[in-house]
Image 1 (cartoon, each protein chain N blue to C red):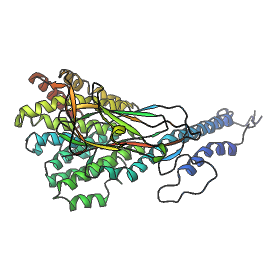
Image 2 (cartoon, each protein chain N blue to C red; image 1 turned 90 degrees about the horizontal axis):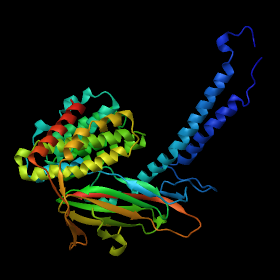
Image 3 (cartoon, each protein chain N blue to C red; image 1 turned 30 degrees about the horizontal axis):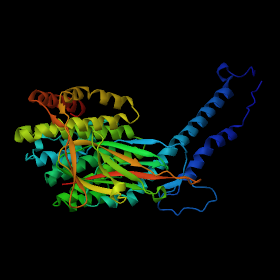
Image 4 (cartoon, rainbow over the protein chains, first blue to last red; image 1 turned 180 degrees about the horizontal axis):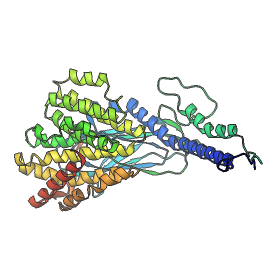
Length: 161
Length: 305
């Protein structure tokens, strides 16, 4: 040990080394953690550019949802729809995912609307007479393709007075 | 004796920076920059697709809640009249100095703004839009309510539908900005503040349209369920936890609302859509309504002054 070195400095390199490792680990974690957020931000950009025009004439619910899904994925939303209100519900997805289907069910699980039976519709307009919670189920079709893609799926809900 | 490092500092720095540089390369191509050709598969392109990053399928659960604009529309349809005295004064906006309080206040002002806009009180709407602009600036998301948006609102001050769109787009963008900046907990607080203010305003108009508004307030039992699920889906920061805990009396009051199961129905409408009716009957006694009114008033007083 260098006798001129003060006691507090004897372990200066190990201390600096551990700080660097901590910093390195921190930066790696930040980079990894930002991956889904980046994809999520791109999904929002996709929604703004491709989906919002579908809601023309309707006031968009401020908390719209979007996610990156792959073939075979499902998504679900449970939401209260207020009586006396006209709604438009749209499912907007990247074409790479194929014909994404959706259905609307009441609180007891009765199907009120099925997009497959409506010619593969990507949106539906409806009026709710009495306030109730409805469930929206979304299904991304499975594929047997060896190369699988992922794409954005957004669910948009708008109201009209 | 001098310690010899196993790896040089330069190597460590490089190891640390590599993922960050990699992320920069992956995400650096925004909408306004052309994508560079590459021999490797893109992770996720700006058009909303990419090669699958996983193979196992999932069930994604989405969360949402009715917007304050919808609640304000319920009050207006009941026949109640606009009363500015029930709104949270815009002068109070400077009292909120922490980000959690600012987010809650932003939600409260958002609901007030929706209320004024739905009732076509356009000068009041612009006053509240300014308050929202200043609070969003304090939260570091001032880009949303830029001069262009404010000018659009001013130019459309006589057009209710245009103002409704401005307000809706503003709050959609504010929510997005908070999420994109990693402040999802604040986004939850904004939603919660908006819900409480929306229901508070409804309770303050009961005397003007008792039958209609009592029924509509009782139905907020379902929207409370939506809002709490949405807020609990976010990372529970201490501030969000505390805020959700303060909702316990409101949840207890709404737990007294009676839900009688009944069959619902859906009928095809002429325009290709459908009409949903029937369903569970939701009612609240006068005592329950009083408990809800008190609980909402108390939680609002805790949050905004």
